[in-house]
Image (cartoon, rainbow, N blue to C red; front, top):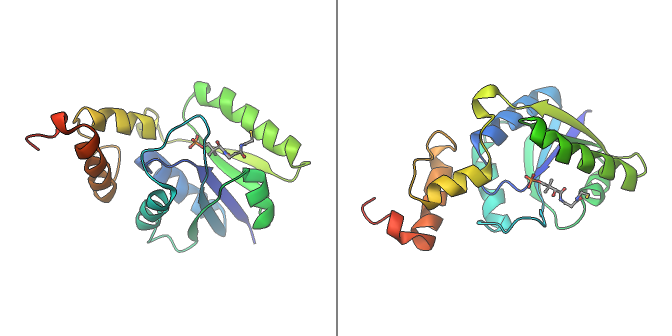
Length: 169
Ligand code: PNS
């Protein structure tokens, strides 16, 4: 059985992530989407909130499971006995970072953990969780970036953090 992990921060999950989830779920018998810490980022949503949102958006894809882990991706991969990580690539700027992390993961896992890349669909090439948060922090429309259930969650946070942009909404 072919099993892969799709790791990420998913803060929050976007249509770009969902595109990768759907396509990876067609390539593998089982796909575990795992919320992991990115030390370079301060999250808007707690891990539990992110897991809940991911479960909601993938509820109709039977071979997708959502989990979270605090630690190295490599240790999680060993724990669930899965040696393939999937990452999305939007542009060449992603590639440099992703290549470094892929090499690091392969090296520190003694060759156990391989990474495969799926190129994002063109329509989502601009999209990231950071872009979503930036737009929403100024009261902008994120309906093209995330499903309605996620939009509601993001707006809920932004109403508290940036009430000045949500006074008449
Ligand atoms: O969605 P992101 O923020 O680009 O995801 C990055 C993530 C969470 C996959 C990456 O930071 C990660 O794997 N973090 C766990 C720690 C780890 O294993 N790092 C790789 C070795 S340097």
